[in-house]
Image 1: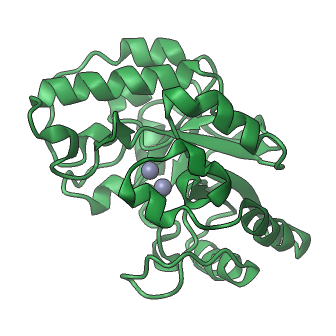
Image 2: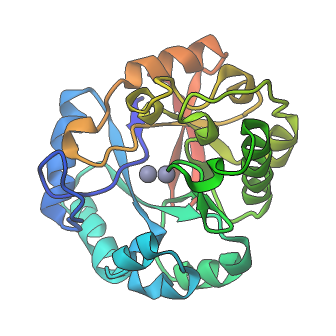
Length: 263
Ligand SMILES: [Zn+2]
Ligand SMILES: [Zn+2]
């Protein structure tokens, strides 16, 4: 089985950053998924796009986007389910330690199939945008700050999957790293094998085999921000997963997981 469990619904056009939380958008994304042999997709909008989560954000980047309705988003995906599309309702939730409990409370009433946990910002500084965390910190310091938060996110118990787990390598700045503390924190949390890094300066899959090898469960992900990227390069993700010893992929429903044969 092939899943793509990470994507953001946007209007057509490569440079479009305009959200499209409609059943028609889900259908459009599904069309590409089918064409690439993907059996099931998961829609995972960023949590900071929703007005209901506004209390958690302080950066202009987040506040500018924090206008959508969670209700409407969920309804679009649930309507797609009712129409028989193999789609799961997810969300990409930023790890914000000081608001994690409050965010979980706001999200609790919705019928999620799975929640992704992501580390994009640390103390208001971006990992995946420059200058962000990269100004005034050595590469090793950035890696250390990032992995400490990733570990805390895994331990929090709020997430089913860690998204783009070694995002910190996005610009190609690497150091030798001991991933064991993160691996020890997983305790059943799945790691996403993401092809998004292939489209970033690092030109590599997330995560590296050293980290992936410590996981017990995996999902597959494109992190598409347009329909055309759904399912892109998943064959390479499957290849890495197989080479690392995985024979199954995790499928979620109502935040419960089961294993299906990979590929
Ligand atoms: Zn992300
Ligand atoms: Zn994403």
